[in-house]
Image (cartoon, rainbow, N blue to C red; front, side):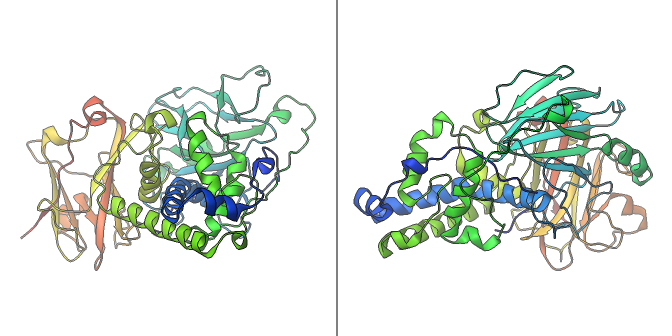
Length: 467
């Protein structure tokens, strides 16, 4: 269950404690108030709950804390990429290849940050997707929501209650003090890179005190430092310490009061260290069993995933479905809310057999089956199980209605060739190369989806084997 791409200095900051609420004897609390079965159930629930937080932090850590990472830039700064993604980009799984990224990890514990965007040409799509620590897409700025005019937006944490400064178009509050911005700007073609760089260079993040020309605020302090990111931590008891550190940066939603109370039974208390020696061997085994069960449930659900559409959105839209939130992080973290973009695709053919690089397929759209998109649509190829882009001789990783030279049939139908070798020079304009010796999947992204796409009336056709 390896996951995700992106980027991201740490300021040790402040917040809640909960330390005063921590049980003095963790072992007695766990052993006396809950059976092994219930401890296992709690651990499973907590592991699934924390999974998207952990993998969101992977990108935050790379961007803001890990100076050895090529994505590093520090907190509250953009890192932009003015090229399309390639198979070398493996930080994020199922990476988007249509709209090069401008990403930033924000820490708004001490003060809000002003996001400034420039005027962008009317024929260029862009979006700033604001993702809180939980991975809820809590707000959007961009073509669909705010248009392509310039703007200034104040990005604030859950506890900020200051006055709105002059010149700010809107204040956008997050549930958490750690925020990840996933900016996407449409690249028309390779000759458009210089224009893309010019636009990306105008995306600005300005600390509030700099914007208002006031002294910098006093830094807050947290009980636990932000951890180093280690893949292995989330498969072990250490996941509890990771959550206890990260949840210091998150407000507790009223809908989760009982959930968080259950979590305390296995030592999940924001701002406190987890000491496994204070728990009985039986409790530790029960927690480890819960981790294993959580992994298994996520893997099974992920393998049976058919639609991406309802996996991304606000807390209200996702209705606190924590398994769906974890599946979204595992399948393609930072996916857009369906009104912004719809994701679909396949890992099986028309006969429900797994797609395999040793076979040749066609993907046929009748004229009426073409995706309805206000902006554009694309299909991107990924290998399995890694879900990375596929190396190929023509260096084409996606294809869509903006692909130069794409050929339609005389009746308006569209045929796309999915195979590892060329379908012939006359058909290469419609060729999306597959891996040679691996299973694969593809994801269709529809930007500015129309109602039939949003409401799941439109259906994605499935590939057919070429005999």
